[in-house]
Image 1 (cartoon, protein in one colour):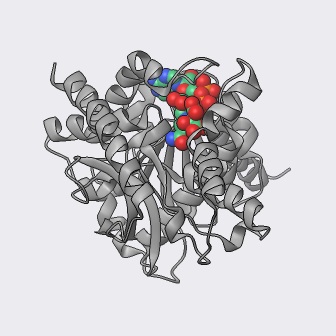
Image 2: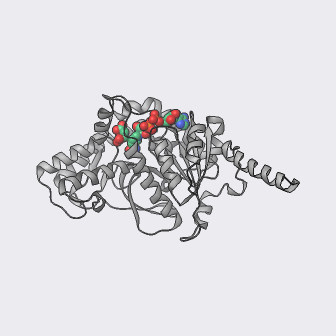
Length: 360
Ligand SMILES: NC(=O)c1ccc[n+]([C@@H]2O[C@H](COP(=O)([O-])OP(=O)(O)OC[C@H]3O[C@@H](n4cnc5c(N)ncnc54)[C@H](O)[C@@H]3O)[C@@H](O)[C@H]2O)c1
Ligand SMILES: O=C(O)C[C@H](O)C(=O)O
C-alpha cells in the first residue's frame, strides 16, 4: 500500500470514528441565528433542518428518533437523554437515510445537543401508571421541563419548541415562564403537542363513520388532560351528524384515550408508539412551515387569547416564524359550550400551578 493509500484509509477511518463517538459539536457558523438559518431555506432548496430530541432514549424518544431519522427535511438529528443515548444513537445512525445523528448524554452535554437547533422536541420525563392522573407527574416532570427549557433559552433561544412531557397543561406554562425570565420568550415558538388527541379523534370518528381515518379531520381544542380535551364533533370534516349516544361515546373515548393505553399497558407506561407517530407528524408540519410551505394548520396548546384562559389548544396556522395565526374556535353547539366552561376551570388551575412553580 502506498503512502497516499494509507493516508486515504486513515482519513476514512477517522471520518467513520467521528460518527461513532462524535465530539460535542461547536457548530460555529450556526449560532445564534436559528431563525435566520431556517429563513435561508427557501421552498425546494436542499433540505437541512437541525432537530434535537430531549428524552430520546425513552419510550416515545426511541421511535420518534427513528421517524425523525427517516424525515428528508432533517439534515442533523441530535439525541439527548440522561441515560442510554450512546446505544440509541449507534443503532439509529446505521439507518441509510440522510440525517446525520449525534448522541449526547447528561447535563454536561446539553449545550452541544441544543446549539444551532431549529426545532427542539421534548418528551423527557416520567409516564403514568394505572390509577395516576397526568397531574400526578407534575412533581417530577416540572423540574425536568424547567431545566431543559433553561438549556433552550441559553443555547438555542430562537428554536421552535414542541413540548410533549406531561402534564402538558402545566409544562407549557413552565417553559414559557423560564423563557420570560431569560428574556427569550416568543409565544409564536412554543407549542404543546396535543396532536395525539387529534390522531385518536380521527381514528375513533372514522370507526363510527365507517371511513378511512386519513379522510377525517377532527379539531380538538382546550388542553391535554381528561375533560380539558374537547373534540369539536360539530366541526368534523367531512361534515357528519352524530347521535347523542355517539357524541357521548366519542367524547369519552377521545378524552380517555391516554388512560385506555395506560391501563392496557398495565404498569409498563403510557402511549409511546402512537405518540411518536403523532409527534413526528406534528414536527413535520413545523419543519414544512419553517421551510415556507403555505396552509399548514395544526391543533396545539399555546399562549392564547382565544378564550380568557392564558394557554389553550386550538387550530393554528404555522409559518416561517412559528405560529402565524390562531384560528377562532368557530361555532360551538350547546354541548360543546358547556364542556368548554368545565374545561376552562381545570385548565386555569393547571396553568397557575405551572406558573407558580417557576415563580416560587
Ligand atoms: N403530549 C402527549 O400527548 C403525550 C403522550 C404520551 C406521553 N406523554 C408524556 O411524555 C413523557 C415521556 O413518556 P415516555 O413514555 O417516553 O417515558 P419514558 O420514561 O419511557 O421516557 C422518558 C425519557 O426521559 C428521560 N429523561 C428523564 N429526565 C430527563 C432529563 N432531565 N433530560 C433528558 N431526558 C430525561 C428518561 O431517561 C427517559 O429516557 C411522559 O411525561 C408522558 O406522560 C405525552
Ligand atoms: O395518558 C398519558 O399519560 C400519556 C398521554 O398524555 C396520552 O394521552 O396518551
